[in-house]
Image (cartoon, rainbow, N blue to C red; front, side, top):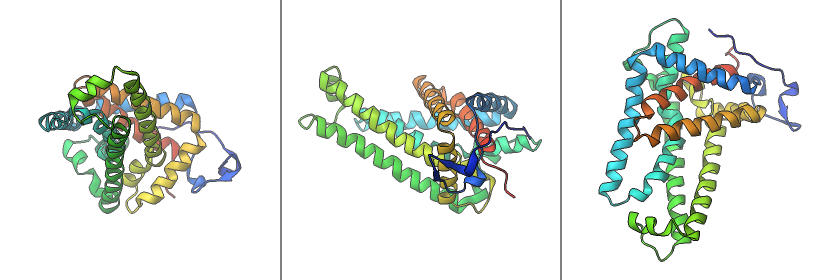
Length: 270
């Protein structure tokens, strides 16, 4: 097991306010974030085709969603849906956490092990998935509502959206949508940064306990965790930009690195 560099933090509090499960959380530095990425890439390479094949599922899902929206004459929903995907990604990436744990123990991960990883804590991981799916659907509805409020006389169609985007109102719409979407993403990150790896690693851990541990980890390490959130956003967006094919690399990289983030931030169970 890799030794993670940690730093002390007095009294387990931020700004004088005591945080839940502070005794379970370590503090880290910005350099540690790049170490997670390095270790994530190493795990991706060591996992061989198993990790790439699991990542290909995300690329295929992206194509299916894009084609489905096009057939429904709703391609304007692709960006909100893609953003919504990032909200549920911590659950979908659980197979990568499982593979990294296997490598950590000296084993060689398999594709079957990745797709069945949720069975380690099935009920609670299912609960997390349902909560995040609902959260993602709320975001899509909010994005649609923003468009409806800003362009009440414009129909929901791809051509109509292309017509309004080059305008001043269209630019304002993009700014508002990005700001609201970023707020949704930050809330999801706050409660899920280490929650799903923890739930997979520790059977019986429920989503709400893991979410509170994640919140504490983020609030105790605001600088490094904002950096980590930014890296996740950039790598994921790059993966989607290359016609979703980039997700074959982007998702494994972020998934494996998230396992090492969890190991660095959360103390081992007693």
